[in-house]
Length: 307
Image 1 (tube, rainbow, N blue to C red):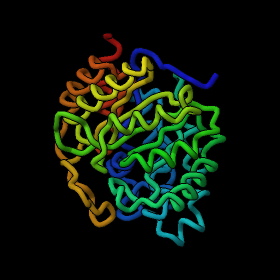
Image 2 (image 1 turned 180 degrees about the vertical axis):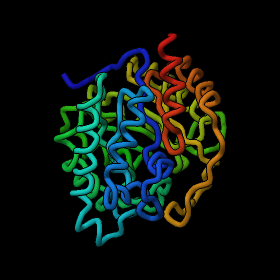
Image 3 (image 1 turned 60 degrees about the vertical axis):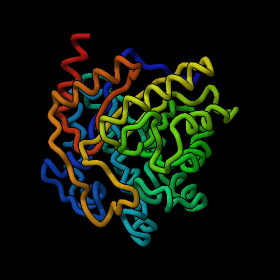
Image 4 (image 1 turned 120 degrees about the vertical axis):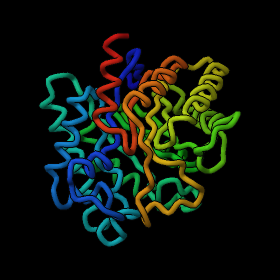
């Protein structure tokens, strides 16, 4: 049976793109984390290893930028699938060599631009997501669809993952504004997004978790609360995950490829304080997104050992 409920606390890795930049890998816009795959894949191996040594139990394939939005249309057509497969092979090899059990998560990124639901086109998205799915599937243990900014994006991912025999997790990116209800970048509510997932009858036993990622830590609390409220209404139990970034708040219409998003200094202790709150509220899968480094994951791991 595919459905999987993980332990009381499972640790994800952090943001591989910023980790590549931190350790000196070739890294620039618009290629982002794909540049290392093209020019120096040994850095990708090292980035995964750094997170495993810090305590990550799940590492995510470095396929986030293997899309036309980052590669450009021509390079994507020529090498997009091959680069995504290469990224999956690297992650699999690193996980296989780990002294502890480490799972590999295939990544399904925003196919047409992060934080930009206004750029979404279903036909194009399905083609790109299917390509990335097929490129990684042989090498991964589970799937995380990342940085989902709208309900329409979620529907496309549901279609791509509908026949998967592996655990599937849906990670939504949130508006970086604290409010009484959590909302996606599209302005749609988290509650409506989860209701949409649950109303897909064939997926009722196939959604393994709902995550929130690539948003500031402060907005995760309300998203978790809203998620629990919907799940309780449906008497449904799912894994809940949170992995925030260390960015400054992202504004609507952010042009991701025109600049590198501004960061703030978020210490491992500060991040741990947020993580403790998420866990207390019911999140059982916690890691980090952009700017969350091995030092942050190490702080989570040391805390987990004391639980």
